[in-house]
Length: 376
Image (cartoon, rainbow, N blue to C red):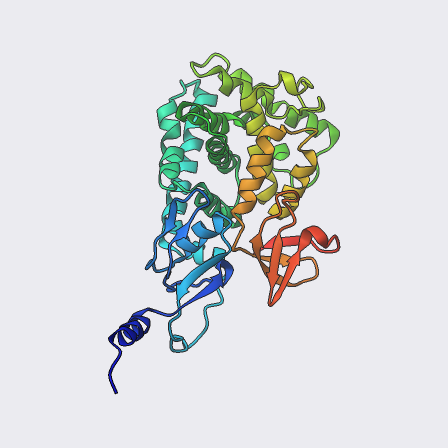
């Protein structure tokens, strides 16, 4: 019988081609190998064929809302002695990258405390380059801003101080500036706004600032004066006027219900509006002496409700959409006690994503009886 060379060639080609399979991104594991390029909607490359997946690459792909990838279908690896049941954020906290971030962050908070003390107590000049050194250093190491949110989310377990809050607001405000397409100089100014926005709290009595219970009406009146104190401290300093405005006006509300002047939207500067968004998000998602951290999805729900009343929608909606995207591929606990994984964001109801619980897909936008109570 005569051999068919064409048939043999096709057979060999088929045998040499690596088998592949399509999986959901939330089923991806470290060590898997991409069998096809992962491409964004504009045609640009996210990860090339042959790339070995790690948590950073998986998070990056998830961040672009890509749900399916193709991987080389390799035989299952030998069973490990014990399964790794670590959550996504536990893996981040245990990574060398996070440990380096936390070390630099902690140094930055300490340095900011010293510099703000000099400004308040010694009337020192404001050295912008020195103040910006640590925030800009952290930002430069995370070109993917969602990675920065991963790092900040992991810091929620640590004690929060006025100075840590100021660093957080500076970083969040700078990320908002990036998402809004601000210039490099404007992002620097936004970062300075965040660093200095609460400087007036250094003149608030400790017993009010760190009170473990709800403030009385008279105590809250004292607390509200921190914006006036802060403005008095920096008003004559040689810094951009937008920093001074943000310090004084970041508690103003677009519907006129804020303080100290009760301004409405058209009279509130844009940078003060942006700092207000960053301030609210960080304050509510961090531990306080009078309460634990509020679940970010609860915060997002509350901010969605305020979006067309007290907050500026042109800044708030892009922020919320992007920050929700940072929770894709994250384990969450639902109000019925189930644990699942966020796999898809609902653009019209950002606080109610699609969550995978075992083999079940729950669209929380269609389940008013369920909500996310915790990030795991």
